[in-house]
Image (cartoon, rainbow, N blue to C red; front, side, top):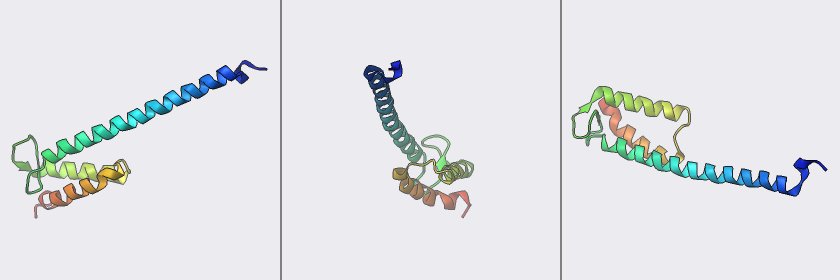
Amino acid sequence: MLLEETPWVLQAQNETQQKKNVALLFDLVRMSGELNKAYDKLSQLQSPNGGFVWFKGGRDDRFMTQYIVTGIGHLKKINAIEKSQVQKLDNMISKAIPISTGK
């Protein structure tokens, strides 16, 4: 009988894997929370007419609006956006596109 085949070593491997799985779960929960915070912060920087501002309370800026819309587009292209956030970001982009194109 090899040491790797003993019940306590096999159990330890399972416990290690269980700990890794629990850590991953908490990490996913933390990342989801961070994603929501980032969305909230970004939505606070969008002016009522759809443009984005450099600083909260400032005037919207076409360059900043284009930069943010392009960044969100890149994230969508590589599937880096959580499914629960897609609709929120689509609404944000649809408000911003007229500003970013100058229409």
